[in-house]
Image 1 (cartoon, rainbow, N blue to C red):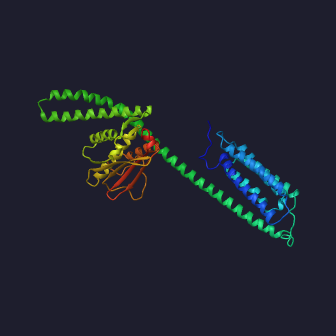
Image 2: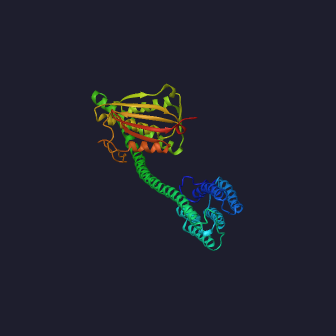
Image 3: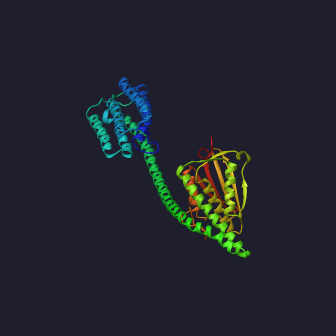
Length: 426
């Protein structure tokens, strides 16, 4: 079922919704103006005719409020019809209160200004033609305002000036508010376009790396299988050489480790394609991550902080979360090594509806410029520059965020994810 584009700051639906609010303000303001002129200033205006026009506008306001609450989209011609209805009612009220001589006649320009920000050129011409026709009619046909003791001395000039002042204030507020809203919407849209462009460039780079990794995994399988076949034979042939046998055993273990990594890459790719989440407790998930991390970085000294009440939290871990966490831990070890340290800290905590994975290192911290990580660039001599980029991409895919900051002892990276995405029954 089609939905209203509520995220669009300007458009037919947004303008129709804005007109609904302005219509309520107009009903209140017009009712107050009629009562002030008729009861307080004792001007002999056709009160019943004016109240009838205001009542018609109120009925239309109820219909408009019902219309914008419906699921089907608001078309541009509907918005134009709403503007025409408002213009006709305003023209009707101006007809009984002096026509074009009424200082509030310039309010006919407000729908044109609003339409220019939200509708097409053809619709703007239709609105402008309606307002122009109403103004032309009010120039020739209208009911003059009657004089009384307050306006008889200057032939109503003081009343006209007062009306111009009120009209100026109303127009200034409306134009100031909506022009500011338009400028804010344009700035927000530009920022969003910039973020989308940066995200697209990053995802394109990640896709290129993933493609190369898939090709490399396929090509590496053959030489690894060959080495896996030859190494046991070499060990049998040189069984008498203890030193060489130890080296060959080490190589055999490294080859088997490479094969395990390739199998995990293939399994991860299949999991990504199937989009099936793994359901485990938090304690089991962390244990698996740390076991893999210790194999990758046996020299690391990891300090773990997990509240006991979170151990049995059931996670619905999507593909990529484990690799994102391992990337952050691996980066933290590399950063700590720059200051001759192997210490890293992993803290998991719950913050309301969020689950925070915080990794701290003992390194020099991030650059003071605050520049974001660029895919393919790294401040480490042995780094590829994709660890943080991959972790950030995973965070965005899971409706979370990656927050980086410097601490007193090094850097801190917080992978912040909503519990509704990663937790079972959250």
